Image (cartoon, rainbow over all chains, first blue to last red; front, top):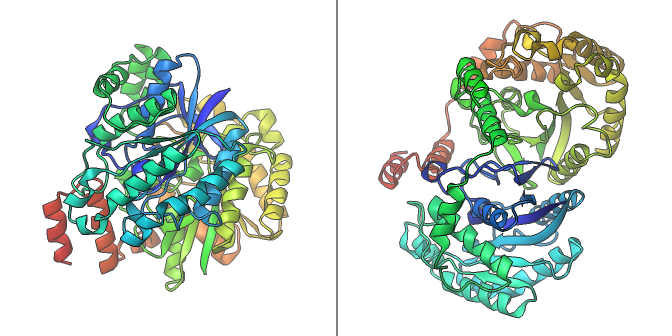
Length: 279
Length: 279
C-alpha cells in the first residue's frame, strides 16, 4: 500500500517557489491526493492560492523514492497561505479539512508522517511567546484524530531572510518562533526540527524560492529517515537534488507527460501523435 | 451570508478550457473554497489535474453577480476528470470528499445548488443504458447528505463534438447519455437540463473549449435563475459573456491582482510598488 504524508501549515508548506526556476519532478511512483483519490504528482501540489508553486514536498517525495524504489508515496496537500496558529485551532475549518482529507487518504494508504511549516503569521512578539503552548494543543489533537499518537512530525524553521524585505518589520521576532519550534521538537516524541539556515527567498523576502524549497525537502526527508533534528545544512543536499533531476523518465512517464502537454494546448494534435508514435 | 454552489462531475465540470484563450474573470464578490475557507476565485477553480483550466463555473458565478450585485457567491470544487458514475458511487472516495467539502462550506454559506456535468465516461452502450438508474441513487443520497431533498440540481448535456475526434468511437452512444440526463431532469423535482448544443471543443474533441465554457456557464445560470430546462442556445448568451468581461475592476481588486502578479514573479518589486502607488 502507498505511504502517505500530510502537508500542513502556511504558504511555505504550500509552496511559492516559481515553477519556471527549477526542473520538473515527474515520477509515477509519487502521487498526490485529489478529491480523495491518488494521481501522479504535478506541481503545484498544494493549490491553495493563485500563486501556489514549488514547495518542499516534491523533493521530499523524490528523496523518499531514492531510498524506496519499489514503493509509492502520496502527498496530502492541506496547507493554507497566510494562516496563524489561531487559524489552525482544532475547531476551525483548516484543521477539520486537514483531518477529513487525511482520513480519506488513510483508507487507501499508510499515513507515515506529518510535514509542518508555519510560523510567519505568528511573528508578532505576543504570538511568538505563546507559540509552543498553542502548537502543543494542535499537535496532540491532530495525532489523536489520525489514530497514531506518535506519528512522526517534521517541523521546519523560518527563513533568516524574513527581516530583510519590505515587510521585514512584521517578522522582527521570527527567531522566537524558531526557538519555540526547536524546543517543541526537542521535547516531543518523534518530532524533528529542520533548519532553514541558508535558504533564500523570492523578491518578496517572505517566500522560500524554488531552488531552496528543493533543498528544504531533502532536509525534511533526512530528518524523517534518520529520525533526527537537522540543525545545519547537509553536506550532500545539492548533490541529492541533482540526482533527483537526473532521473530518466520511463516510457510510460514520457507518454503521460506528452498527454499533459497536449491536453494543456502546448502541443498540436499532429505534434502529439507524432511524438507518441516515436516513443 | 455567502451563497454557495457545489461543482461535481468529471473533466468538463472541472474545466479544461485553455486559460490563455479567454479574458480573466476576477471579482471580489466571487469566492471559491480552499481548505474549508473562502477566497477570491481564480481559475483554475477545480484543480483536479495538471491540465485544469476554464470551466463553466466562473461565468455561472459572474452571471449570478450580474443579478445579485450586493451578495457574494462561493464555488465548491469537487469534480474529478475521467470519472464514471461507478466512480461516483455513494460509498466511494469522490462522493465522500464532495459531501465533506460541501458540509464544511455549509458552516459558512447557504448552499444554493449543485452544478453537475458528467457522462463522457459512461458512453459505452451498456453504461449509457443504466445512466438514469445509477444517477438517481447518487442524487438522492447527495441531496439527503446535504440536508435539502429539493436543492436545485443543474445537469448539462454532452457535446456533439465528442464523436468527431481521435477518440470518437469511444463516445458513439453519447446521445443515449444526453437522453438519460434530459429524462432524469424532466422527472425530478428542481432538476434542470442544460443543453450543450453548439458548444465547441479543444483539439482533443473531448473537452469543451474556454469560450464555450463561458457560454455554458451562462446557460447553467439561466436554468438555475429561471428554474427551467435550457433546451437550445440563449439568444443573448454571447452578449452576457461580453458584459461580464467589460466589468471594471475596483481599486481593491486592482491591488489584489497586482499582489498576485508580483507574488508569482511576473512583476519586479520596483514595478509592483510603482503600480500600487499609482492606484
